[in-house]
Length: 385
Figure (cartoon, rainbow, N blue to C red):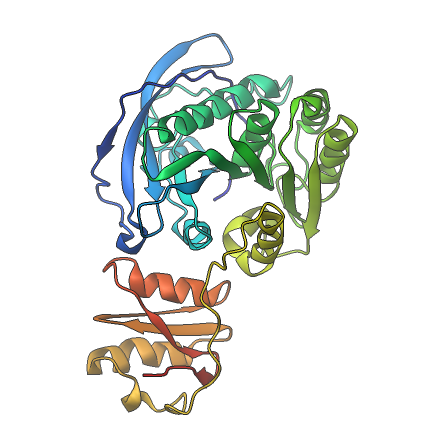
């Protein structure tokens, strides 16, 4: 999801030992990922010294079993308008969370103060505007909430809080960098997806108004950071452009920070959305980065070899109900490559495009909490009884 351009803010958060689970409400729930929502109390201060207390929704996904599992705190960005900041009620990132759960992590997705259900005019992530942007206060506001969530996670018996990672996209990436320089206990590493602030993809495409301020802040704080980072940006990012992320990375490294940098080729109309639309390319880079820390579990089952169960166009042989065959499978056959079709007890799902195999399995499994297997990938049937 895209993030900011004009406003941003500051904050400090506190944690409380008591937080409670809440019903997820109207948004879908991924039963196969054991999705649940907690409300975690935080206290934040904005750029102007106003302090407020809120309870933020934190969406939690976990692998099957008791754990304890390592954890990823996954951070959203900032919308480009007040109307968009009010939606959704909570962030989920189900597609990306499914990847990390497959790697063996609990995933916690906080919806920070000022977004979704806590959108009420108090904005602790405003940076004061482009005339004199102040980046550190809003970085602290956002990262304090990450620290509150990490502290709350210590109360969950299935989380190993001595092994956790922070990741995020756009202002969520800025939040990630700030969390790393603060060296919280147990933090092992971080991934910054297109992190930054001060962008305006319409009024100033490719030019953040806070390039200098971000570089200066990150260079000054980098020596405090201990955890290694992976930074992923895209060439056609309409919020920052191609050069600013390189300058920010150079500033971080010159300041003493550790960060492996990759700038991926252009994707879609705006590479700022690469976190959501370019999983096929960023997943291998994150896989390799996590493997350096010993996390080598594959996120998806191995792709089966083609079978002789049926030809791809033999609709009547697909082992699902007639309505699913005629509707869902026919749509799969009409979809472009890459594509995948998955089936399970009482369910089916297909996907086309980016990360098609993972999304097809997710669509099949999520709402029913079942385990699905691939039936077909691209032009090949891979199903075996």
